[in-house]
Length: 134
Image (tube, rainbow, N blue to C red):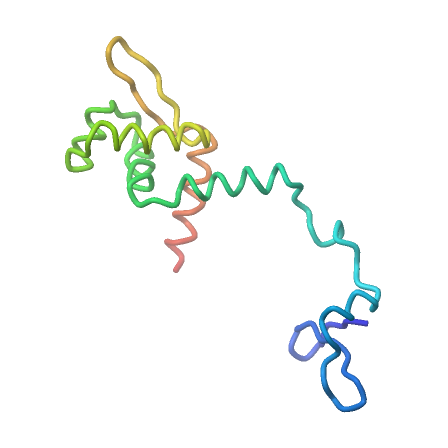
């Protein structure tokens, strides 16, 4: 049976008479807890969380989120603040953030005003606070 040592708080596997660890594949015979007891997230939630991390995996998208955290901005202002990034490149990054429900776009005549969604605000501020503590 696997056990957690109180001295080092680590999981230990039993060893055989020679002091060698029992092979990992044999641990299935040791009465381990069921997968459901260790895995709280279902496949759908794992995919959703993974999509959020993918959406935030580019420095340009992080910069966009940072700008929008200060308030809504029109596309032309975002483009200017990102050193005149090309329209297609900015569109690509905004589309990824929209699909992940991290930003929202509101059309106003010929212009689109972007802002952080509620989810985007919470996620971005949590991530920033984690990095501020480092």
